[in-house]
Image (tube, rainbow, N blue to C red):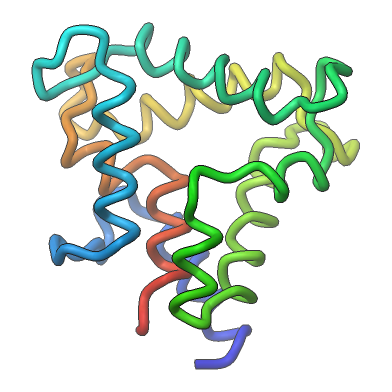
Length: 161
């Protein structure tokens, strides 16, 4: 599938939280499930906004390798949970890089080429609310897998569609 088609698929997938996310076991899904489990302070099958934000803050500080208080595109694309290896194995590096660029642009609210800590925090709040389909202030694993923008974008990029 060409890059333009993959980009369109990514944008379409990002337009609706539960759109076209397969329940099939894939390396990307397995990794996302592990990440979800690591967010839960008290494993209950759901995470609250606090757990999500705290985890996100840890990720932000980990990405901000130069400790400048913001994340530039190079820091963003060089930091990874392991999806990059899955993309390489699947031969989907270009689609994965496109997904990273889309996510970065989505989180860079003022389009200055950096994601500030404030922008990242706002994005985490918005992304949590968007993924919380039943609006109960908790994300189940299904909501997280199907609605969290990073999962949606990366899984779309790694798919064979």
